[in-house]
Length: 313
Image (cartoon, rainbow, N blue to C red; front, side):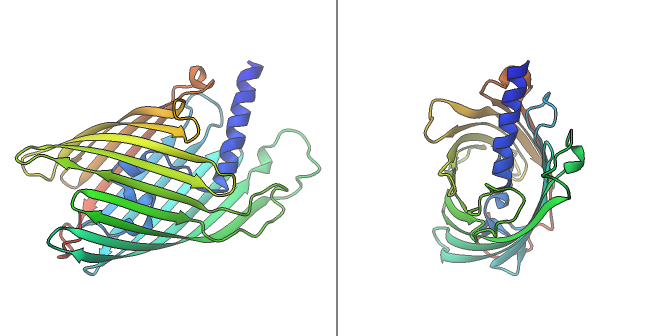
């Protein structure tokens, strides 16, 4: 039992450090919600897209990480887009909440071959707090509320050519002013993401196959991960409604054969309503003491057809 608590404590410490670097990214971007990983996706669709996401990690372990978020983006005119991302993240006695406000502009490189370039910028506001009222036992080094508010920016670019897409993003591009929250607190918050994929479509078929890859690199310690994803999508006769299923495989880039998380996903879109669920197994020594990570996404797409630009999905 002591070994179990030690593993949980170390896992929460690792995630607490990650919280200071970025909001944890699981597979919510695969739930037709790519805007959460790059501001250049803001307004890429021809409607107002709203996604509510809830994630509970390591179910069965006390004070395990838990996250809720709301993402909404829309077209602004014919070739621009705006979006907002609100989030709340807790991990043991740490709390993090904040918002991202994004703007993107979409350029038509070749309208006959569906070639587009999108550029995006986000302003980020983040509050990080330690809940010292929950600490057990006196600690002379912790005598007041420990919290900090940080301001930063993200930049990104998205290139699309027919059914191929690739986006590059840099998050938290400014260094952080060190404070007394922790002696070894990192001040380099930058992390970089690459997301790419291709949708295979067969003429006169309602089945689509979409392999994709998501890579994230943290500058402060050189840590990096990769997601390998595969989605199968079956559309209805009207082409608008669909059901999909898939799987995601995440690993540290220096440990290809030892996945961090692996699990199935499924979802559907019916009219303006969207629903998705994903389940991930954490493949380490905690696996036998929790029921995995569960994530639910609810969404709605409204005001269909608000843009006449060919650069929409």
